[in-house]
Image (cartoon, rainbow, N blue to C red):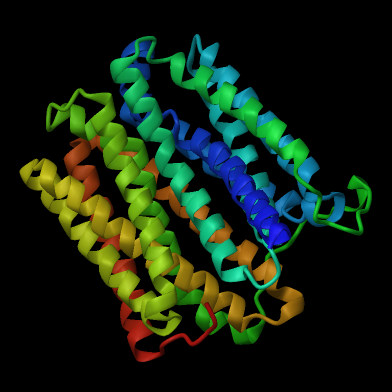
Length: 396
C-alpha cells in the first residue's frame, strides 16, 4: 500500500510539472491588448505572434518527438523547462516585437518536448494497473495547465500591478520549483541511448488508418482552430466590442474553453469512441454557432457559452480522434500516426488564426470571425456526417 501511495504521489507530482510548463504557453493571452498598446501593432501581428508557437511545436514533433524514448524522460523534460524559462525571460525583456516572436517560438519548442514525453512519464510513474487514472492525470495536467495560464496572468495583470512582468516572474518561480521536483522523481526509461541516435519522425499512414484519419484529423483541425481564435483574438474582441477591459475576465473566458475541453475528454470513457467523435463535431458546430451569435449581437453570455460548449466538443472530438487513429494503426506505426494527428491539430492552431488576422485588418474583427466560423462549420459538418455514416470503433 505504501508503494502504491508513493507511486501515485510521483504520478501527481509529474502531472503538476506538466501543468506548470503548459501554463506558460497560454500565459501571454490576456496580455496581448497591452502589448498592442505598448508596441502599436495590428491584429494580424497578434495572430502571427500567437501562431509562431504552433510552428515550434510542429517542428519539435517532427524532428525530435521520440527523443525521450532514447535519452530518457527527465533530460527531455528538464530541457523543456529550460526553454520555458527562456521564453519567460524573453517576455520580461520585451522591448519590441522580436522579443515576442522569440518568446512564443521558445514556448512552442518547450511544449513540443513536453506533449509526448510528459504524457508518457506521468503514465509510467503510476502504479501497475492505474493506466486509466494516470490518463486522467495527464489529460487534466495538459488541458488544465493550458487553462490556468491565462487565468493566472489575467488575475495578476488586473489586481497585482506590473501586468507585463509579474506573470512571467511568477512562472519562473514555478518553473524552478518544477525542476526541483523533477530532479527528485525517478527515471522511467530503463534502456537509454545517446542523443545522436534520435532520428526525425516522418508521419506515416497505412491503408487501414486512412479512412479513420481523414474525419478524425478534420475534427481535430477545427477544434484546435477554435481554440486558436479564442486564445489569440478573444481578448481584443472583449475589449473592442464588449468594452471588457478587465484582464482577469479575459483570462477566465479563455480558461473556461480549456477546462471544458478537459471535461469533454474525460467524458469519452462513458460515451465511447463510437459516439464521441460525432458528438464532439456537434458540440464544435454548436460552439461555432454561439460564437457567431456573440460576434453578431455582441453578447458576453454567448461568448461564455461558446467557450463551454465548443471546448467540450473539442475535448470529445480530440480524444475520440486520438483513440480512433491509435486503435486503427498497427502497433509499430502508432507513434508516427499519432504524431501526424498532432501535426494536423497544431496546424489548426496556426493557419486559420493567421487568416483571421489578415481578414481583420480588411473587414474588421467581426467580419473575419464570421468568415472563419463559416469555413470551420463546413469542415465540422462534413466530418460529422461522415462519422455518423461510418462510425469509428476503437478503444479509449
